[in-house]
Image 1 (cartoon, rainbow, N blue to C red):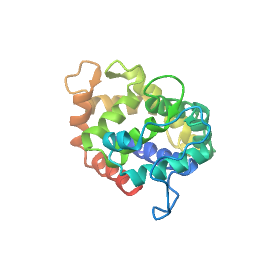
Image 2 (image 1 turned 180 degrees about the vertical axis):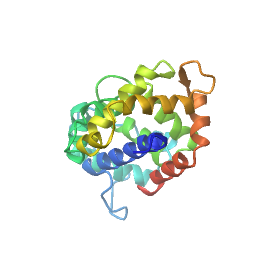
Image 3 (image 1 turned 90 degrees about the vertical axis):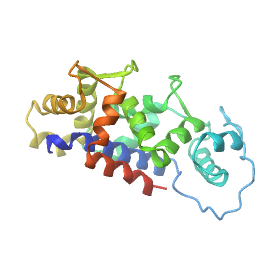
Length: 229
């Protein structure tokens, strides 16, 4: 793996895992021509989503698209929420030769905006709207939040090292044999050389967005989201 391609790898891993999560939850299935009730069908669930009109106003999805998404979500998650274990199961299936649990943990925390240990339909749809149809700034801001593990508004080297190690653990034997032992630290150093514009030891959101927009590989990677749904 080329050190210069680290940031692109991060974006691609998010895309791959995100698409697999959607497929697992049945959110990429369903015919938009199917007859669906105008209002969300409700069964006995632990959590019921907000009204369609409100979600339509808050996202880049139409009412019909939200109906289809909710139908798939409800079929796979009758309780109305997804927990961290579900994320880990999805990634474990797609990366059977590695340990995806830590990366799944970080990704789940990015979806769990309320930090209450569960992802509701609204949480999932809001993130989906950003990643699939948001602006470049919105997509990069969401990605920055994933890397900002302690949510203090900065990415430090310890956080980046944790993310890098989580990705290597997830890739398993397909990564480790071809890399030197100090490769994760090298990747972190490359990341900070590129992103830490003022060399103060942390990467801010503005620095992250500016650096990503200067990288053609990252910009092309972000466009891959647009063809998912």
